[in-house]
Length: 183
Ligand SMILES: CC(C)(COP(=O)(O)OP(=O)(O)OC[C@H]1O[C@@H](n2cnc3c(N)ncnc32)[C@H](O)[C@@H]1OP(=O)(O)O)[C@@H](O)C(=O)NCCC(=O)NCCS
Image (cartoon, rainbow, N blue to C red):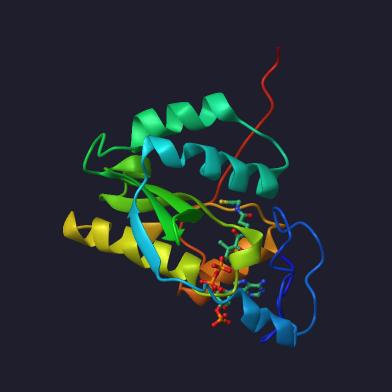
């Protein structure tokens, strides 16, 4: 695993975080990223989807409209209390989102909260937006009685790893396995 030294900044504008981490703190101009308005965290609405799709397309390089419509059907509009799809809004603009769910007895473990996706628009990173999104998700999980948060991330995504580590997340007791299936 790539080591991220204390104080090192992975380029916050990097897409999936596959680029090399920058071995320096954010440039002095980074303070300009501070949102000018109030950051509000709220459940996603259907009308937010275009902006969510745009942020995801910047991060992943792929526009996946049908995927996002199906995610919204499953996680949006209070579909089920254990499913959460939250957005961060500043001055009427959606600048980030988080998706998570409480899953019961998966892999034999008691109910725990999973965070599946968290993304912030590149021009508003390093301003605490993702921290606010994750806190709101965790509050929702706590209200459901959940006391454990889990996620899975790509090994080479040092940006998302740095973020989750900053929130106190550490390697858990499970490991992913996979294999190719013949056509
Ligand atoms: C990871 C991401 C969500 C962080 O969003 P953010 O709003 O910039 O995060 P925050 O401002 O709340 O940062 C909280 C902490 O995370 C860590 N962190 C965030 N960006 C970092 C960076 N570029 N380099 C190193 N550490 C970083 C820091 O410890 C930071 O705390 P600090 O600023 O007090 O040092 C955002 O960069 C992003 O959307 N990246 C792409 C996400 C992605 O790859 N998604 C696909 C998998 S779901």
